[in-house]
Amino acid sequence: MTLTVAAAFEAVLQTARDLGTEIIPFEAATGRILREPVLADRPFPPYDRVMMDGIAINYDSYARGQHVFGVEDLQAAGMPQLQLSNTANCIEVMTGAILPELTDTVIPYEQLALTESDDFRRFTVHTVVKQGQHIHRLGSDVNAGAALLDSGTLIGPAEAGILAAVGKTQVLVSKLPRVAVIATGNELVPVHAIPEAHQVRISNVYSLLASLQQLGISARYIHLNDDESEMKEQLALLLSETDVWISSGAVSAGKFDYLPAVLQQLGMQQIFHKVQQRPGGPFLFGTFEQGPVVFALPGNPVSGFMCFYRYVQPWIRAAMGAVPSPPCYAQLSEKVIFETALEYYLPVKLVSRPDGTLTATPQPYQGSGDLASLLKADAFLVLPLEEKVFERGSCYPVWLFR
Ligand code: AMP
Ligand code: MG
Image (cartoon, rainbow, N blue to C red; front, side, top):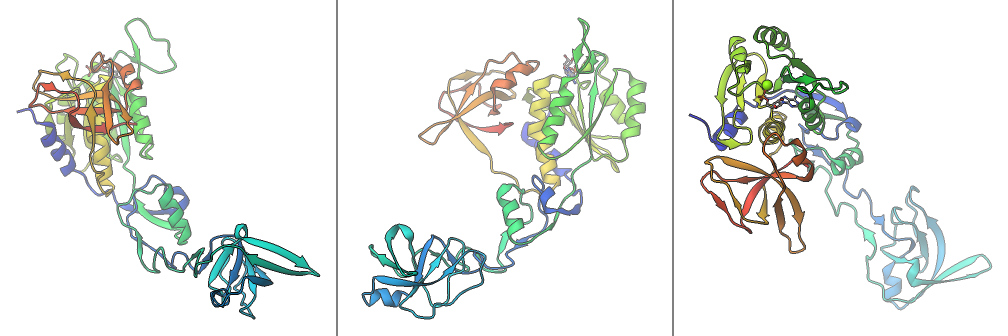
């Protein structure tokens, strides 16, 4: 029996295997999945940090009615901590400096008037001052030893800053899978070739390689002709040293769609073939016991694209120990009718509206062979198999590819 998308997805995720970990320099870790917690080595901020350029005073003097402060010294960012020797005076302070000892309040230059005479500088305060103002207190953001990043976090720009701030120069991350992209079809020619009338350039491979690149994975690729023995021979060579195969084409009912048979002959355990979905119905999935998992995607470009984002990307993320992202939903902008009992993945343009809703607008779409339709879309809107009429304003899950 053909599986539902939910059942197929569950079967795919069940095969997600830990790919192991490696230690890499933190500068190379963006886009990778962290596999250890990262703790604050010091409090955040690590000292009472001055937040404005101006002067630091002892508030008691101000509270007693003093409004003019003679300047004793200058505390710049990067200087060891000074001390106010007379609490009736002030120290000029710069943003990022450590707050001088015996001061507890910062007044910005904008609220001060400067008078200078014989090398002596005084500031007059002309606003109301609150005790403790403009000081970013030691440990007020995060305590020393607190967990800043959990294992399973995707390392992005904010996380890169944290790794640097805590001096985490080497980080434990998931290894990336070793992926092979496999194109099939006698009609395919290299990208640099001028195709004959009956040929097409091998474009699916490059969509898949680009999708993998977004996950930080550089994959290798091969092209197989629709020839059973050549397929078997070439694929046998690929069996070792790969964790994932993503193939394109040769899994439908065509006379030359040899791939399912060849995979079986090579010892792959088929987990399912065909899913109740459009596009991507002929999707085949299996595993080799001591070898790669196999995502055999249909050749039609939109089918392969949809299957990559619906199945392959989540498998790779799960295998790398990533925390799953919550689903995203959007509101259909117009009524859609789809009568076939399949889960329908409709290419849509997403627009975020001022009222906080996300609207999904169907794009002109000629079916799964329409590669150009993806250019105007951002995501697939998932229309459930049980319904036939999808009303404007109804909300459905979306799978984003931008
Ligand atoms: P298949 O699944 O092998 O029947 O292929 C379905 C359609 O996808 C055919 O029109 C193929 O020419 C096309 N196709 C298959 N592989 C690729 C590829 N790598 N690049 C572009 N088109 C492809
Ligand atoms: Mg083919």
